[in-house]
Length: 291
Image (cartoon, rainbow, N blue to C red; front, side, top):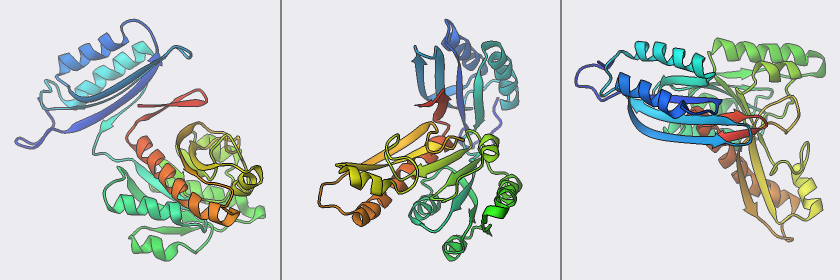
């Protein structure tokens, strides 16, 4: 029994969960899948001996389902409660809704918009928020709404409230800071915990904060990089999702480093957003598990 139209291709679903590691976790969820006729097409798992947690992501379809998807969900919820699981379960074509935020540097924004338009980013972009007008023409050319929310020290709290209002009104699941050069308040970081990704133009944990390329130049590094991470109240210290690097030498100036770094920033951020939207990232303390 499936929820698909007769003759249509099977519908795929994504399940991602983590729970305390113990004997029988695999057997319990496997038995449920077998009984419901859930046909697994992709699977990855990891057992962490340090945190004693079990992490799993799988994709399955309904070609052989013996119960409706709603009944499968009901049964899985009972299992999740019994096993202490944190989980996400959704149809694969129910794409996460993503709100982008940018200031003036548009290289990361361009990469995300291009991949989205090409169908290479498994997300639904719902709009762009900015504290400047510089990127309006670009964003509107892609047919997306542009929310201009200027920031001043006196009205930062009000501006953040408007940003959060846009996030909620658009039904967004994820906020992506694509070189949005504003530090989010502790309250907003808490509100969007695990639902906001930032790109830092440095290979963290090195060179945190402002002017990381200048810091790197002063230290004479031979590799520059970029880090995409979840946003937390601790600046540039959130769990790392993806990183990219590029080799340089003593001849490269700060200005050249900045331009070279644009590529690593765009690649790292696009990769991190894709991983998140495919339900491949699970928080594991201060670390992430990528499945």
